[in-house]
Image (cartoon, rainbow, N blue to C red; front, side, top):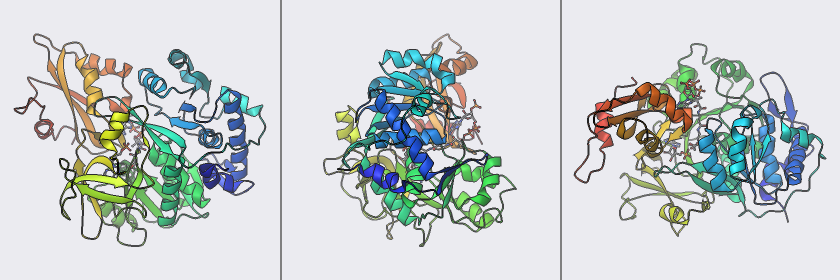
Length: 503
Ligand code: MLC
Ligand code: AMP
């Protein structure tokens, strides 16, 4: 027996002295050292009483040790459950309870606040800080640096990634070892990643993009990464000359283009820039090419499906499209009502099938049935068309979702919190064009009769329940929400009315 994901990503590098992680302060971590640390963490997690399939929830800053905890979970057959570091204790509480995580690892600066949250859901709390220290590290330091890799099947769960739902309740997307292996191998081959690559890694590692697309692809190729704690323009400008590839959300590219230090010369030795998680404006694509000579390679994916389509490495990278389906992945565009395939070039619902598609939502069989068809096609909620060359164009969303700087904001979740606020009768949250984040949220409130809601107080209050990135950038009050004859709020009317708010 083996552990296919561990063997494919990590085990194959045992003993390699080549660098895996570079840090901006000049430190280097070899594959060999990384794997010894991984084994110590795997031993520590096992020592804490965890068994195969137990969930390990982490809300920790990006660091080599955080990556090693991910690797340790894979080695020990545990299910890795990363959480956005911006989530509030209220939000974390839901994830711990819903997932039944046995252990919760957080930054020690938040441990006082989060300990009761962990206790309430019977998760043991351990700490791991950005500098790699903490209670989990202390325990790991007492452990051997070899670990007998736990046997797994490709169909076993490797990770839970929570994705918000249109009802306001987050769903745990269950990703198997095979989901991750197939996507990493396909992307590494398609994007020509090799052991010579140095990926400039500035994405967060609690989402598919930074965790799986960036790290797994690098690992499959045996390349290295410059691990930045976050996207910081000065650091990017400093590190670009040492890199060969960068993966980003569109905000990375618009911010780079706004900086005169970002020149063609700075990017001249780069091999690849990719973009995803949100639509890249054709205008950004064109400006980027004019400035650097590089055509950004745009791809498309989702938490539930990993990556689904990609513009080609060698062929035409077409602005405004996300390219054809990845090898081994099927896409089709269907009529949202009948489920039948629409004619070529017509807009409909994008559906995806392949080894990349997740297993279902944790303990939500009905939600799973609604979105994952029996024949294996996953209904993405994205509206798309496929042109005669097989290139997919994402033209909109059937789901009520705002994507702000690559983070998803589900209006319903925010509306539920706004509706609770003093003096508020009801609310609607809409996404509007924003020059930096692509889209940003506007909260439209209707006051209770005779009340005058205090917008500043509301802004502060919602911080209790919602991560900062979900907060509406602005709140406005209207007399009434526009509704159609069925009583449904017409968000398109509101979007039109407030379209220039952030411009
Ligand atoms: C930060 N803020 C955001 C925000 N990011 N608000 C809305 N949307 C965002 N994306 C808040 C901060 O808390 C801060 O609040 C204020 O906005 C300004 O912060 P900033 O310093 O300008 O932001 P920064 O830290 O630089 O972050 C911006 C960013 C970051 C774009 C670099 O959001 C980011 O790394 N995004 C990537 C997200 C990602 O990886 N998505 C992949 C999902 S996977 P205040 O209090 O100061 O006002 C997926 C599948 C797929 O979608 O296909 O890939
Ligand atoms: P998430 O649930 O965080 O994984 O976000 C997935 C969503 O991001 C998809 O359903 C799309 O709406 C969006 N998305 C990802 N990549 C792209 C892209 N290249 N262009 C447009 N939308 C994208």
